[in-house]
Picture 1 (cartoon, rainbow, N blue to C red):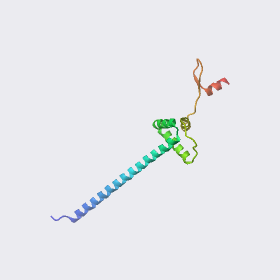
Picture 2: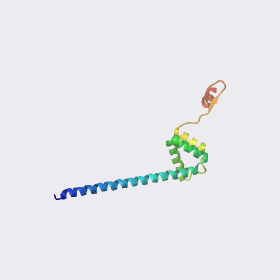
Picture 3: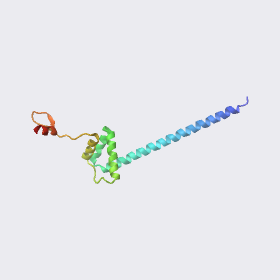
Picture 4: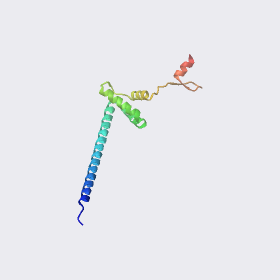
Length: 132
């Protein structure tokens, strides 16, 4: 039986299509790997820059904050990088500075609590209002 030319041409066409799809997939995977590597390098560089702008104690606190509350930590890191870019950061930030920024972002006010003998713990604000 002679080979069917139409069938052979369809097979060749299908092979070319599959080969083209394979090449597209490989290119997409390479592009994705490249983007992933670039993101990792940016994060490493950003971490290095931030660590230079923080005191050692603040670096430890930022690492803890990154694990416990990543969204707030990312916002703080972005803020620090922005301050560095605008050359508004004159000295290294301490742990207390990072804690203040965290409180502002989360909306938590600092509280001073008072405990008197035989009484419960109350806020200083409530204690002063009660005396008036």
